[in-house]
Length: 87
Image 1 (cartoon, rainbow, N blue to C red):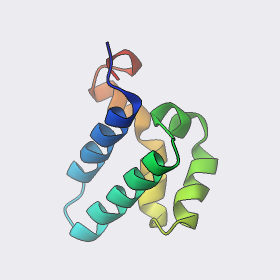
Image 2 (tube, helix red, strand yellow):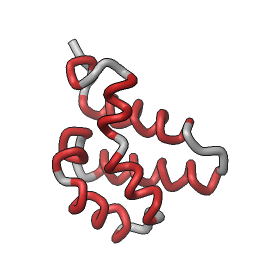
Image 3 (cartoon, rainbow, N blue to C red):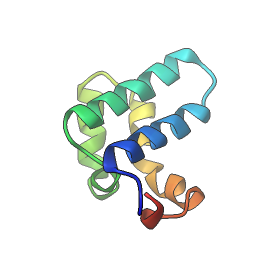
Image 4 (cartoon, rainbow, N blue to C red):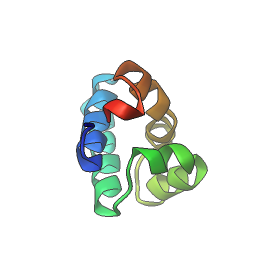
């Protein structure tokens, strides 16, 4: 059995934060995580609606580069962590 959707989002955000070194960028990844959970989105929704999700995050104050990475890197994260079935 995979992770609950909310836990998969948290794991993804932790992974994203591990890819950067500055507190400022980590803060924006945390913002993206909080927004994702607050609005009931999950990793599948991010992967399927990249442009829409990018606009959503930037509209809510997440830096454009962080927003783009957050929606674009889902497949890379899943490849490193066993795919959709593991989540």
